[in-house]
Length: 116
Length: 113
Image (cartoon, rainbow over all chains, first blue to last red; front, side, top):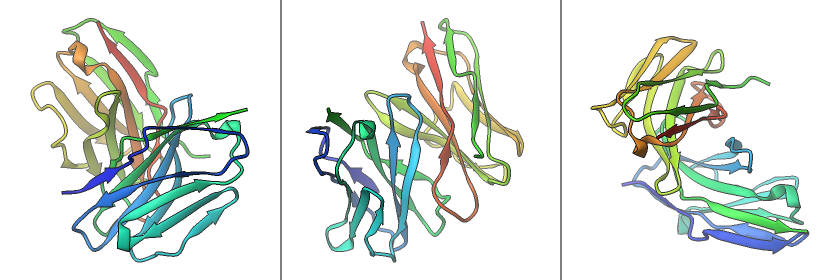
């Protein structure tokens, strides 16, 4: 069975602090995809990143970075120098199969609050 | 930017009424998904289509829910009859055959009273 666990329900930090959101996944597939989505207070789901199971290189995009470790089945997300606009619920997700358009299951989300 | 369009944005209806939610996927995307988001269950996959054919609807209560894609530009999710426990935000998403992740619509917030 596939599963995504986001153990941190809520995190609150002061602006400019770095924060890491944890994601642990379970799958029996050898080929799979991992995603992060952001859901700001407005409610839409915003795609942040996709990573396939064969690519363990870390990714950096501005203040965002992702650390994928197959050995620990983790795909953690770090925001450097956090800003108030980063306040949102963040979802980690797992997709099965050989296509990034296969169905994906979501973790329960981590609510991140950035205090001024 | 291309976007997935969902209508209506909000719907309040009485228990027992039929509800139809519509989704226009991004042109050229061949896979369409319906998700439901509630506080208790989080984001649940209800059904999805590829090239308009249903691939998986195991997450959908079959007795009252139905999902269709009459053509490549329209996906529908119907609930008949609706019940208060159906109150949720329903998201549609579409994805190309190859590429990055799904693109989600803004959702339909359904309230059944």
